Figure (cartoon, rainbow, N blue to C red):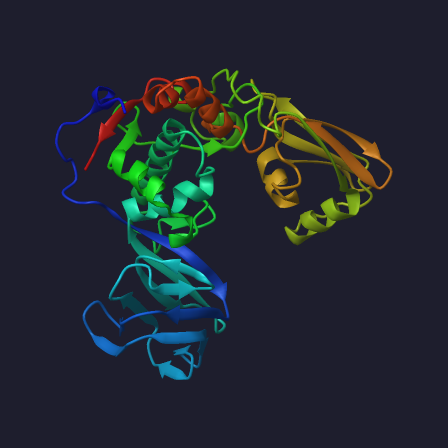
Length: 366
């Protein structure tokens, strides 16, 4: 590790921050099991139940109460803690922190986990990047994920949750290994800042040769760390170049689910390409005329595992659209396959981060 490139002025925060992660939202049922001693509170201090363990059961809500298995609690919110970390299992995934079950409308509920940031990053790292990859690539990913999470905690500090588990791949304890936990600890408290401001440290799988400006993709103000850089390192990704067929009917169905109505699609064209050839918009020509959508929104609606990026050319192919493109993801920030190739070439994690996020400083905040 290269410690002398990290600014360390002593702790700027007195302890590791706690983040609130949305695990379940707007659901009528979820599965819960607890493998050891636990407590349930209806407030921060009022213990209303406890036990030695809980067999797998169903969480549900009705008539103003929360049901856990055959027990009913007349509370709008329940907090569940276990005696030992990682003993609470929700929908077959084990979690370290406290979970909060919160009633919503129409007999639905959400579940939020409260967990210290380092434990959260430990659960993210192996889900966002292959655990077998080079340690410097993994260190770069840990700092990137921590920076993103800290930014979200800052901008959402007064909201019910800071992070949706879909924003960062997160599988609780399942993604952890001793090697990954060591790597997280080696970078503990380190984040990236620009002009002493934390920023949304976006990242993606494969850029295809050049990362994109945040303004081009997300319409947010451009800053040097998120303005896009040349990347000559991700050619070994199987998604550096790709081609796929997606049926016109499937595209129409996905758009209709988002209340965007088109029929008999003839063409789908990425327009206004950026430095990495990712379109900022998509133009859809159909029987309804021509319609423009934000390109990344279109990719997510169609399915990011089907339409890998918006850096594509396309052609009508009978009942399908054939998309031929490069890269996987939105193209902003760290290119993960590029980071791995840089690490294999001997670049250390600080150099990797400073390549993909120009003009940053690395600061240990706790």
